[in-house]
Image (cartoon, rainbow, N blue to C red; front, side, top):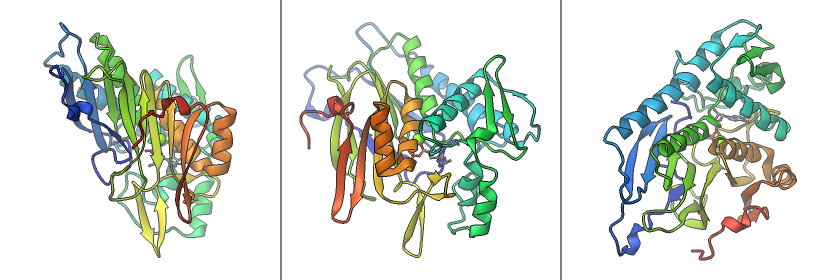
Length: 346
Ligand code: ADP
Ligand code: MG
């Protein structure tokens, strides 16, 4: 499993709206494939054009591909390529697969973009707070443990080289955690696999990471909902409509524990060594690639309502923030996000 545990196997924050409820005049050709991966669920909606078919073994190919990604990038699999890299005490260049390098390089790029709010070396802190592969602790660590663990964290302590693909740790105990962008990477790979079959109308997702192309089974643009960030409830805040894009939502109410009335989420601020403060209910990002949307949504979540919004504006990102206010929630979004808001809102 790549991601941390989720409270539900279904993506809670972004739900693909099944427009089939509106009685289509023609039979809906959508083929749906779903299953479990990376600690959550994957879902493919494929819309073949007349004459196109989905091969009987396509689901097997999907699962083989997802299993392959886990074998490369999961920190939940002690024998994955990433886990072996993490255990490797060498501070010389360590050869890695081009795929692992690509995801690490994107992680490092997101660190630079977010001035370190996003950091794939944050794993030891994630584990310390009990959100990693080890059994859940549900207890706030001591200040001393946090300070000590922070010593091991810092993306500048990790170097990536493309030719030949290799990574280099500055400290033997550096530990890389790709959970904040590997689901997005998986979604991009799923989309590429679908396209090899010639199907160009689809929506694929892993957890809350979604990528769509073309139109749905009724010939309409794909529409998804940004949910109201209220645990245990599934009300729609906004509808977004998009084609040929990826969308990701980072929200800290899906995976957390509570102690003394304080909520601690699985997204850690590398600067403080503590879970991000609850000033943002969620951040939704739309981008060409799912890996980028996934990483960026988490990065903006950590950066927070002020700095995060500034980053999104400066870099012309399509981002939608749900701020927590004493009397409820407040929306704030960049001009780049606006075209995706569906005209008919709930
Ligand atoms: P969300 O959708 O809530 O942003 P993700 O699943 O994308 O969550 O990423 C959260 C996971 O990423 C955590 O479970 C942890 O393993 C890792 N993580 C936590 N904090 C950071 C951070 N600051 N930078 C990068 N990865 C992080
Ligand atoms: Mg993410």
